[in-house]
Length: 342
Ligand SMILES: [Zn+2]
Image (tube, rainbow, N blue to C red; front, side, top):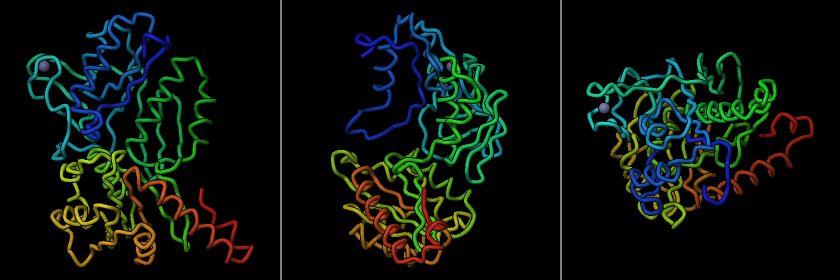
């Protein structure tokens, strides 16, 4: 593609394993992207300083690179048992040492053998707060977003870094981040029966882990709905659910009331959650999406999280949109303005 269009800059977010049957192994994906960039001297790269899988991109491609990354945050962990990529140094193959993890392989790393370490970021995210909505400071610019989750904080930082490189002014960047509302499946919010419901797309272990950790940061009891499909667009291979840290759900601080497993592979998801240590009395299998969502909303909780793989996402969204609209029709006028979602 880079031979047909001439972009001014190219942004790389992060590398995670995703849908093996569509994209193949991660190493292959990284190599394809890196090789396509070689010798493109009229291009500039915006790279994630915290992702060790990108550490050699500038050197390997000979392309000028700018970096974005986060300083220490209160959400970091000192160790990581979660499944992750990038365990080994891309330069020499030695196992990396980490001072801290932001999430997955993103963090402050160092190779004891060849001294490969995080490049110094040109665009630094600091003072990150997720309450649960995101706010932080990018160099000197403080930003606020209606999004949640560390992965979204990275997306915001990356987009702001690119915008700054393209010469867009700080007030415009700040306003755009503030106004950008979550879209379908990206933490989109509905209010049904007075209860906030969050619709979220899940498709790989790293994303799933992020959502489970984000749920833990959200205080209060949650009901959880997970629709697992295995159509071509979801990825036929659902073994990724065993690489995800579903064990988080069994911890008290996760605040899980009950979980409803739905979709074509509802039984597989229920089995995964059972093996994660969640009491089977709190796991239900309801394959139909409509009935599954209805039952989820009846569970006593403060928030409902509706997680779906790709082909279940739009069906679930339709159900939620309809339920929210029906409830507003039967509600007195004075209450309607308070109940609207985003
Ligand atoms: Zn090394």
